[in-house]
Length: 68
Image (cartoon, rainbow, N blue to C red; front, side):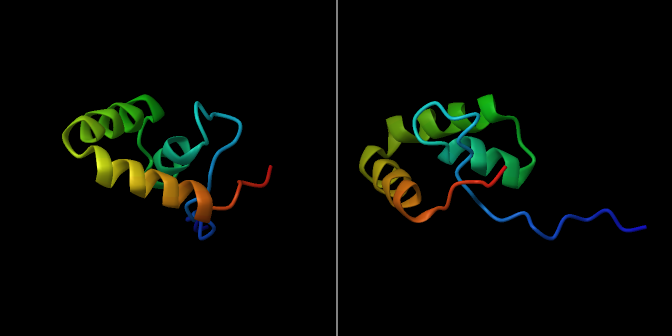
């Protein structure tokens, strides 16, 4: 039996959110720990603040909330 999940889009995870759920949704999508995704986002923000803030804002506006 194939247990591959075909429904793994990128959504905002509103249950595990700190700001809007973008990082926790991305962590779920990539099978990566949420804390590590948030750490990488913060480190990238320190290096490229405008690009990361713009990308986060666009993801916040465009991504749908995960249905539970």
